[in-house]
Length: 299
Length: 253
Image (cartoon, rainbow over the protein chains, first blue to last red):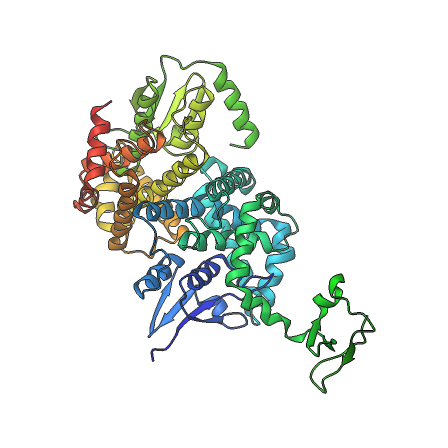
């Protein structure tokens, strides 16, 4: 049997499988096209500075960049765009270009250049996920790459100062989000009922923006007002990435109850606090299974 | 420009009608202008012609330095100067002329997405071929770019421009691409445009929009400019409906 494909990417946090946009794009596409990937996070390894992430390893060859990885997966017959018409395929390319030109600079600015966000969220996260002594270099290097990309592509020669470019990139990003919201409308995904590569790209870009606890996020506020995009993101997380969030529940406290019909009911914290499942004292007795779970008396 | 300045300019723009003596500035046509600048300039000229606004084309060696954003072409209307197709479209919209009013929100989103596709892929590929491919840069781009200037300024300016463009390519991740990959990207972009155009005369409804002007500007320039080899033109020629689109747009003006 052929060895599985291995994906190197940044780790996850804030309910997301990964905090890095490009890694999220590849992870989402793999879920949509049912490609089995062995996901290896580069956190706390030297690869945080040596590898360009995301990176797909298969049979000795390595593929980088989300577009290249998606092409590679398509060639391996993991194709989520199989049912698109030619025009929809063309629209996909166009919308991806729109995301890259209009939304990506503002995302880079929000996470890496905005002083408050960088100092309070991004730098601590990346510092805590890099090994010593790389934790001194990794965030700074990413931040300077982000700044130079914004200045070189968006700043025209008299505007070499970042503050003057900020207004322009944020207004373009808000317009881009509005355009995406218009295009999505009331549908679940951009092309009908099944997700495609465009959905993966949009998800990868907006999910960190929705989920990250940003101290100063004017773009985040704008995005939260676009309900259909937030709904889109949560739908994908719920339907395709619930394994990631379910794994986190292994150390909950459980209470084991037996109701009069002799059915065993396992009650965890969430269930305990909901009013309709509150057990009545005369109907059930608590039972503790030896050594396996913590038990508490019924509330 | 900051947002407040933009709003101010739109207000001034709305106040006056289009004057008789509007001028469009671009580098010298015969000797200096390069493929990417020529494409952008033709796109703007086509857009103005589609709106029915007369403009005189003036060729100056220092057009790039006169421009407020450093990019050509730019138009001088009344006492305002606006450069690049995007801001020019907004400026003309403030004056009351617009080609895309008949589009609904979804179509406008598509139009903007396709314009970004052309800018992202075609324009970047043109810049790459001109400045990052050593052979083309040495034979065509550097001599042409610096032709109005004398030694040693011509060398300095040419290498400075090349360094700037290479830095930009590095920042967006195109410096690792080979020439074949760039041609492949151009081909994919043309395929997307060809599929979107289908058999219609224009991209949206029966009326031309700024997207048609932009696509015509780039494709016509690619087809008619002589580079070191014909591969770029061949990629475009393989899509017949794009060829007939160019022909139709050229003859209907």
